[in-house]
Image (cartoon, rainbow over all chains, first blue to last red; front, side, top):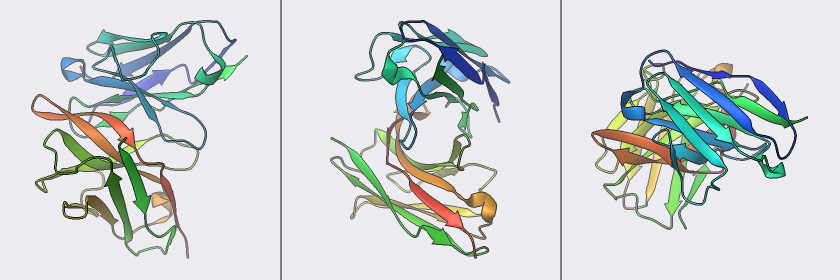
Length: 108
Length: 123
């Protein structure tokens, strides 16, 4: 199975700053079948990005995804107060689907 | 608006079977455009994909759980279900039902999630 490693574990930033989250795969992710999710305490995850770089419906354009192969990045420009949460990457190019361990974006 | 709602016991004894049902509203589970599945999250930890099922009943399971799980679908009730047998404390988690999109020759991202239900395994 493909193991996804997210870094850093925690990112401490202020509102208005840019967040850069990394997701590295143990082997190449087929056709960039990589998604990003946001999870707030007590809530289900929400799909942000699919296909490595396509925003899901209703997701603000300050969220962007990039990357291919084994290295992927989620960038959040101009952090808003509601963006402080935990972010997970997921690969769906091969079975079993797998998730990264998550990156927590916290207020500095 | 599509909604998914998990239901089932919140407490299961060790060695017994965990059974959950997901009721889908606002959309048809019989659509060929989606898979329906389960994902779990132990308290304070990350996400684990359990498995999915297609409307025709074809299941795909995580090999790590394959020997203990059954996912089934009831299109007449617009529901799908999870059974996990021989549970231990390690199976304590929030269980989410979810919709997966489709992609070329396979399952896509997870675009809709239920609110999740905590299942505790304890005597």
